[in-house]
Length: 158
Length: 295
Image (cartoon, rainbow over all chains, first blue to last red; front, side, top):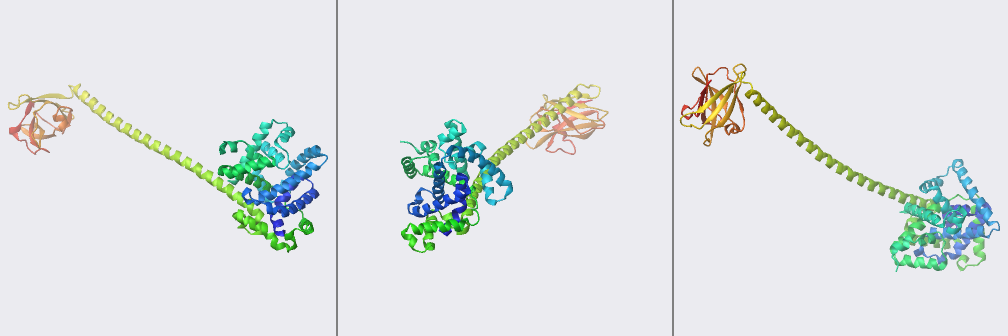
């Protein structure tokens, strides 16, 4: 378990933090996720995808459940988005971290509109129709952007 | 029946990757992925792409969190009394690692503590490979274009050389034509000497154009009997009864196709032509005299 923690905690912490925003809640969700992964590892099916994808999805789903269980759902969401944008802007110049180079490189591949959509879908826990409503865009546009963004990301892996 | 292209285009794979589908739809996508390798590939790409995205957001957890979280997780595991948890933690922790090595050799090949960055490095290695491939492809296209252009340039240069040669030929012809015209139109400069056939060759006929000042001699053949093999006509100037070599006639001149400039002659009263061995002789073979004419 310690080995597993050392290997995946940074990635999981990053994803959960992007979703729930608050640091103490991130810690709670991470702990919850690790326990869940521990018990569910028997059900992990290697033929369905990489272990990394699987553990990230478990953490992501728990984090999304967390924000959905909040009473002030909509307001916190809008708030959260703004926070996350400013947080990103500030984080970059303050602390130079090699792992953020990867993020910058990747986000350079995505136009801001694509990134906004994919962030809402992936980190915001929004469905495509909810994202369309939130961004005041036609559903078709959201779908196209999500699809294009995923293609761009997929190309990075090819 | 849907084909795999339609499935990929349908957008369902993206929804699957983003976790938007209900379990039934998920199972459907998984079934399709099992049936079509192309769908599997596309889905893997999308999931891996999102993996990169997730990995890119990695944050180092705050100090002290490791012990706190690990402690509580381990306590939780022991408490729920999972059968494996009764055993010491370290050996059972091997389980995910072994699964990784079975399904994902490239992850397992790196040392455990650096595995998370290794996954990202791997992603960038693949991205770099893609960039390299694209660059190679671009180079191939550029090379093909360059070769094509180079070939076209060679063709154009050849064409240009051909035209230049043709122009030179035309200029030479024009020059000689103008010269001949000048000679023929300047009766004061060039004296025309008609050479008539001797009794042996009554139909033979030629003329010499002679410039006494510049000493130039031109020969213009009207008609000459055909030559035996190995023979050539030779022109002679007769000065004070003495024959002076004025040069041999080219085939073109003999056939009457062209006017020929002969050797310069300082002084002459008559011109005559004889048949000589190819290359000419030092002195005329008088019994082969074909034409003769006085100035």
